[in-house]
Length: 136
Image 1 (cartoon, rainbow, N blue to C red):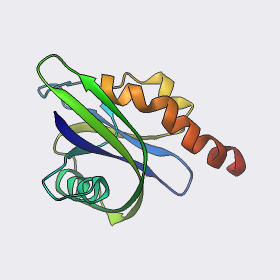
Image 2 (cartoon, rainbow, N blue to C red):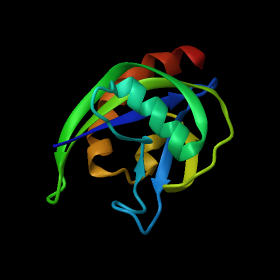
Image 3 (spheres, rainbow, N blue to C red):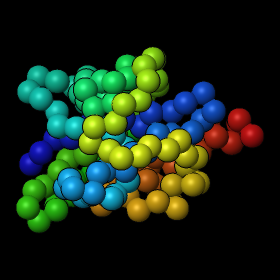
Image 4 (tube, rainbow, N blue to C red):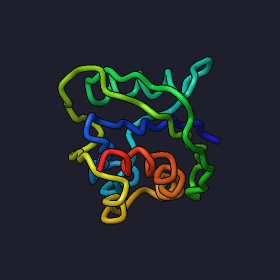
């Protein structure tokens, strides 16, 4: 099983960052919450911060776990752990993705997410629904 952390990165407007995987990669064309493989001795929050720095050249502060799921892709089984995060600084430079978007929790329905990420959507909506409602 591959342990993976994903950052649920929220901006000041309450929108969440999603990223589309490049077409020539595993799950190319699918949207996801960015992140990557957890290294030995690393927490999900530490992994998310490291991966976003490596893959997108931004610094984030990652915190508590929002949700997790296990998904069998046939060739690999992934344990995906979503962590809450905020952007500290940096300018997005994409390596493994070809596009990013800041979306509301309601707009997420308009995107085709990778299967493991799709399994987390309801939990992420629950975690952010009250936050979004209070900003309206």
